[in-house]
Image 1 (cartoon, rainbow, N blue to C red):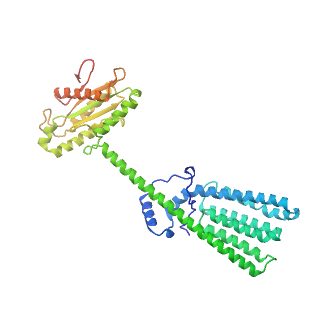
Image 2 (image 1 turned 90 degrees about the vertical axis):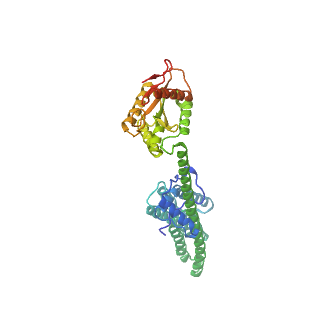
Image 3 (image 1 turned 45 degrees about the horizontal axis):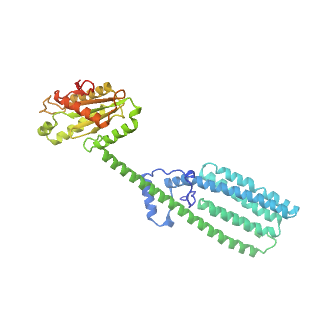
Length: 428
């Protein structure tokens, strides 16, 4: 019984009435797979699964219960009004006081389900409200007597059956409603002067079989609701795993596998997006083309493994030298790195480039056959785009940075050159 929780309808609720499911934890996924791997009739929700299901289904459950309470009250008032028209005043007056029990009981029951409360509190108020509603319906017939006596007892059983069928509640709660209805029916039938005790017991047994069948149907609906919830959790888990796999593939497709920085494709996408969407909203942009000096000599003297280690270190130094997360670093070629500085002017680009150059030199990574110093150094070409000058394409700005890099190599390496469109290339 503890495994049961307030269930949602087996029909799908509208998106506005259902709380979105979050990605389930591995422990929950394991439990879901185990339950779905067994027989449907053995499905029971416990612990965290039960809590998740209760949170998921509560809005719909509360809406159903509130609607039932309201309609029972409306039908009670309409029925009493119809009796007032068709029946003698004395009979109507005898029905009035028991009928007045129903609306307050239904109102209290509806109000309890306006917001989530403790499970035990919901159970106490729901069962109490339903009991007084059933008692009110029965007393209306008992007070009027005659043909209304047994008729209203039957109506009371019908009201109980509708509650069991419609309410997506705990099986124990449904059994309590059924037992209350049968108890009220049996007590009043045993005191019914119009029938024998045997007839009262026989009719109670007949109606008990119907109530029992209704409770079995409620249990089946509950299990199916649980299974539907488990399938939704499993689908959510699989979709999350697929999304993670796609994200990993996308990351791999945009990342250089050796250095961990962006690859050439990713940088081209960044430049395309900036030139088409963000260029007019910024002050400009700059590019740095960085090249490891005498990298071939390093590979020849120390081996390719040391060369790979050098590229990883240099990539990390360049990345750590950026201004913030807006700046992008990509491995552009074998030992070339392209740096994109959105919104940077020439002075800012010069500062970043010098920071990269000096930090690489200070790292003292070995390159014993270098023609500069026996350590790894970089040459850097800088090109800046300012909005007060003629706008050029990303490809053109990149070619300017590459041309400046070529001059930096000619100037002796381990330096930076800034491309100056008006005066030609000048060394820094």
